[in-house]
Length: 186
Image 1 (cartoon, rainbow, N blue to C red):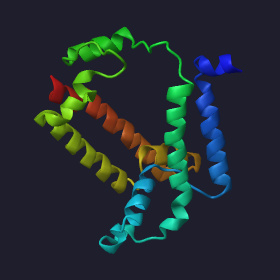
Image 2: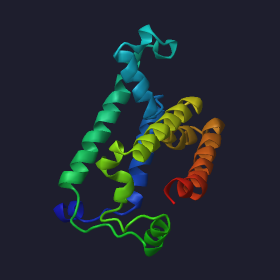
Image 3: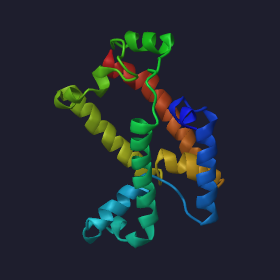
């Protein structure tokens, strides 16, 4: 059993677990989404006194905060106790695509030019993070939920608005990757 935990798990295992969790949530009439946790946290902090959007019964959403805490704790356990020492290898195509954009070969799976903490303190890095954060926040609010809420929960509930939102997320990702990203980093 310990050998199973210390080796890479099959890719399909996460799909089974996500399906099981979604079945349980559907059974109890709940819908999953990470962005709704931010609304709950803001409401707990008192944002409902100033903004109508945050005026709701946040106590009914405690289960979602427990779910979020479980995801964070589960990630910590997986990283520190269930991971293995075999480094992930990026494909040569990914490395060459990054090189075309001016990035050095990543030491891990993420280019340092994007994901190093020192980038927060550069003007370009600060603006990229700030504008990106505003667009993600606005997009999640405008779409009525985040990518996880629509793609996992909404589609499993057969909601057409979620399918449309997920298609929009993919189109936005393609535009960012192939048009905007090269403009910013070339």
